[in-house]
Structures are given as C-alpha cells and as structure tokens.
Image (cartoon, rainbow, N blue to C red; front, side, top):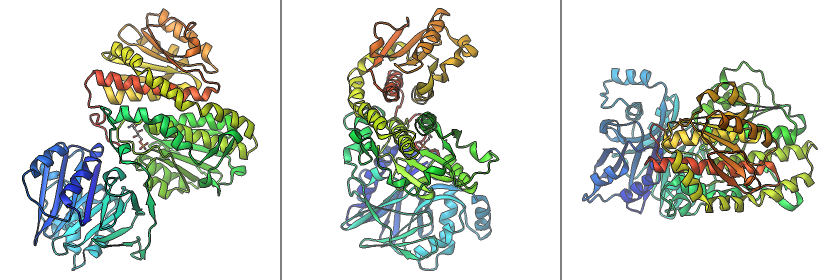
Length: 601
Ligand code: AGP
C-alpha cells in the first residue's frame, strides 16, 4: 500500500510534495522518498521509517524545484526498496502490484539492465527507459501496456524536465488542478490545501502534464477530455481537527457524516427517496441480491441483508468477497451484486466484482472515495460521502454504508410496492434524530472510557448480538482486534451456548449488545446464563432499560429509539468508543495499527 504525489507548476515542489505525503501517511509509513530535477540531473532523497525521517534528511538542503515526485509506502523496510526508483534519466514512483514482474524482469536482465532493489516497481522504471525514444509519455504508455496488474505511476525524465507523466490502472490516481499548476496524487487529502478541483483518471488513462497544460489519453492512446469534479471537503475534514487521533475524530464526525450521506437523497416528511444513480435498474424483475465485501464493509453488508429482506422482500446473500469468485454460479441481469468498499480499491472486492460481472450479474458499488476503481468499473455506483476516512479502523464509513443500504432497501421496497411512503416517513422521522442521539453518546464518552479502562488488559473478548446487532457484534470485535490487538470474536448471541460459553470466566469477558430491539428478551436470558455461569459481562442497553436490565458487571446505555434499526447506529458508536479507549489505554498506535493498511490492494 503506497501513497504517491507529483507536482508541476509555480510552487516550491519539495514543500508541496512533502505536505501532500503528510496527508497520505495512513497509506503507509515504513519508507518515503522524493525526486526533483536539478539542472541536467535529478536529486533523489529517500528515508526508511516515517515521513519525519525524510523531512529530517531534507532539512538544511536548499532544493529549488517547481516539479517533482514523491512516495510513501508500507512494507519497504530498506532504503534501497524505497521509492522513487531510477533508471538512468527516468525516475518513477508507483502504487500497485506488477503481477508479471518476474517475466518482465528476466527480459530486462537479458537486455543488460541491472536491478538495485527487489521491488516490482523497478521493472516499470527500466521498462520505460528501454522504450524511451525521445518522448516520455509514449515510453510510459508503451511500458505500462506490458504490465499486468495494478499501477498508478508518476514518471519524470531529466531529458524532459518540464514534463510530468501520470498513468493508472486499478490503483487510485487523481489530478488536482489549480491556476498555475497540477498535483497528481493517490488520494484527495494530499491536495486539499492547494485545490478542491480534481480530474479523476479512468483505468488505462495517461496524463501528460506541463506547468501550463494537461493532455489526457485513454487506453487506446486517443486524446480525450475528463471532467473536473469539485470536492467540497473542507481541509479540517482531512486533518485531526484537534483530536488525538483520526479514529476518535472520525467517530465524532458521524452525526455530520450521517446527514451528509442523506443530503440530497430524501424528503423526510414525505417519505421519499431519490437514488438517481439507480434509475436504469429494472427493479420489478430483480430476483436476487448478493453482497460482496471485506471486513467492516462485510459487516455493513450483513445489516444490508436484513434491511433489504425486511423492506423490499428480495432474497439476499452476503459473501466474503475473496471467496465469491470460487462459487460456481450462473447469474443474470436480474441479479444485483452490491459491492461495498470504503476505499473502492480493495483488490478482493474488485476481483469479486469482476467475477460477478463475468457471471452475468449487474453490480452496484457503494464507495466512499470519489472516482475509486470499484465505482468506475461497476454498473451503478453510489457514494457514501462520509469524507476522507484516514484512520485504518473504519468507523464513520461503516455508519454511512449501513445508512446508504437502508436507503436502498427502502427505495427498492417503495418501487416494489412492499413499503409505502408513510412507513418510510415514520422511519425517517426517527432517523433524523440519530445524529443528536449519537451526540448524546459522545457527550457521555467518559462513561465508555471508564468501562474500557476496566477491560483494556483483557487478553480475549467475545461480542454477542442478535438480529440487527449480530453484525454489530462482529464489527465491535473487529474494532477491538485491529486497534488494541486484544483477541476478540463476534457471535450471534444464540451461538454462545453451542460452544463459546465454555470460554467465559473472569478473564474472558463478554460484551452483550442488547439495545431495545425486537428480540431483546431472548438476548437478556442468554446474558443471564452467561453471568450465572461465571462470566464477566459488560452490556449495552437502551436507556429505557436502565432500571430493569439483567445483572451484569458493567452496563452502558444508548438513547431510546422508536424504530429498532436506529439502535444499530447508536450501539456501534459505543463499540467504536470502547475499542478506541481500550487501545488508547494500551498506548497503541491507533491510526496506524501494526500490519494493517487502509486499503488492502
Ligand atoms: C476496517 O476497520 C478494516 N480496516 C478493514 O476490515 C476494512 O473494512 C476492509 O479492509 C475493507 O476495506 P474497504 O471497505 O476499503 O474495501
């Protein structure tokens, strides 16, 4: 997982690129580097470790440059494997995976090229060099045509110091446009201090950029126009906004991001929903829906199953994306595969999407990153508009995903005459209060912290939910795992007695998610049994049960809801806070947990 930034224009390239990379640190932080043309040559400076080490290496050096490229990456623990990568007059940064690098490397070795690193990227650099005949963009175009796999590359040549060439396939790459210059980068936050206007490149596109102009070629080599999109993220949305960590900041953003997700899609009082993105979908003949996703997005899919079956009466399956391609399935256009992905770049989900399309299904992508590969390749795409999610632990994206699927479920139900506008208006009435209820939870976050402090030293945890909170049990367990490194498992509460209850004792606590929902009584009885058998129990209840809930060791409360689905959005916030405070108490690097990256490509 890497982040790349290239700049060409009137600004100081080193400052612009380093500042851009600092907004991409979530993409990787084991090495970083920058290259800027200097006279007839090029200055390349790389450093292992976090970006601060590169800044340290640059300090005191007067490097005057108005163009250059930079890179930050994970899994490059040696300087030689850091980018930028050089082959004579060609210098390159790359985000992606060259699947056929062995075959290409052998050919280049036979042609006399020497390799300095064991990165697959170096193959691309030498390939461009081997194809260079005086035109950098042509050389890049011809070289990437031979690459199998994902790439987002930025290339410069000391022979053409006024040119920056950008190209992508599958890996993210967008170009920020301002008066007097361009910034090409993996993700929007890197450019927000410069511009909010971006050109989103399609797969196979190549952009030739000079200080005053940009020419874009599609995958056939034809010069084309790509539209400019205006991103209304204000800068603080991409900054910590005064919080210790992006995770806690993003947890606190949820009241706002829930409204952002809804904005322009509903008329609450009339119970009306507008999903123009789906206007071509033949809803009447829709026979089957299959969700495809990973991790937190898969948990949102499990909620989506319940919402769609309840409000649209369409049978729904939920597949782990990485397993779906192995299913021997014949689908048709009356199957809708819904691929959920915050980043829109998760390879497992993209592979599953392509498999679904190959099997004859239509695909709807639900993404949070505008212009992401998944959105571009699918039949339909809906954005969650949760703003940049920097913390590797996904929080606000989850609630936005769940809300988006709820809207889709109601929209489908309305068109299939299963759910009417009056019912939808009732749901929206309660939905519109969710932001203030989340704020009420956030105002009581110290209560969650106090309980987390009692459990942060646990080595294990089991999370239990039922019906709508069963997916929240899985999500809460994942949050705890990936931020605090405490082993945690999520189960439907009914499963506890089929084995896991043997685990419970004072050292192996259980978290019951039991807000006021339809099946509450039955989950109460399971909680009582876990307690009676010596378990240590922490539970989340609705406020209305404050005085009449089963005995437990610690209880947390969420505001009452009229519509049971809304309790999901509240309960997950408590689970997010609980995980955050356990991890904080353990001194974990919360936004950059070990071994993880924001998008698994
Ligand atoms: C969530 O907190 C994790 N970071 C991870 O499970 C993530 O949800 C998963 O990798 C899917 O990512 P995506 O939504 O970007 O596809």
